[in-house]
Amino acid sequence: MAGRPRTVSEERIMAAVASAVGRVGPVRLTLAEVARDAEVSTGVLVQRYGSKRGLLLAFIGSGLAQRAFHVPMRAAFAEAPDDPVEGVIRAVAATVGPDRSPDEFANHLAFLHLELADEEFRTLLGDYARAVQAELARLLRTAVAAGAISEDIDVDALAAALDSVRNGTQITWAMTRTGRLADAVRRDLTMLLDPYRRRAEETKQ
Image 1 (cartoon, rainbow, N blue to C red):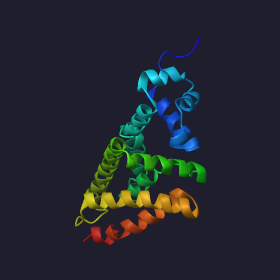
Image 2 (spheres, rainbow, N blue to C red; image 1 turned 135 degrees about the vertical axis):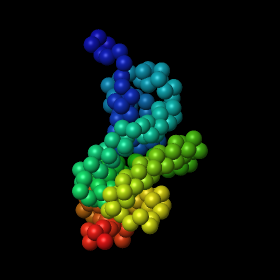
Image 3 (cartoon, rainbow, N blue to C red; image 1 turned 180 degrees about the horizontal axis):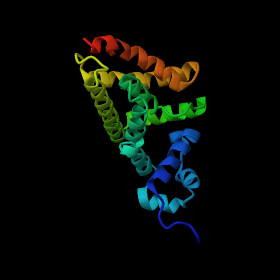
């Protein structure tokens, strides 16, 4: 394998897992399928992860890395410096990714079922959910400090509600296929956050 890099980045392999899961689902997924997408040998994956289960556990665990959601969320939030509430909405919308085909969405839901049914997978998934909610709470506190959201709120509870809307809207959109997913998420988040928004005239009082 002359000319091939001696090391393969974790990002490249995890991207290959995401692609393969969306294409064939977790049950039909094989190390060979991932190796083909990552342009590595199956032996490289076996050496690094041991098995398909080990690879999938690593894939879920990689979602806790800052690059998985902190970076896009913070970048989206920064796009609306004059309206932190809009920034929060953009940050959440940035986590849903592009619209997926019905088959691809179904394959990712099958993967979620695997995660929920297996304690080790579920634990990692719970860690991921808590990390996302913690980042949402941080952004909401920024909005409160800027006077854009009422101070009389439970920030952690509102962050959990935002995450629930994010997850629920994706499933509803997958069933109805009405418009774009990102637009559906923005609509539902706007409805949730609007009652907590402080208007310009309130901040002047």
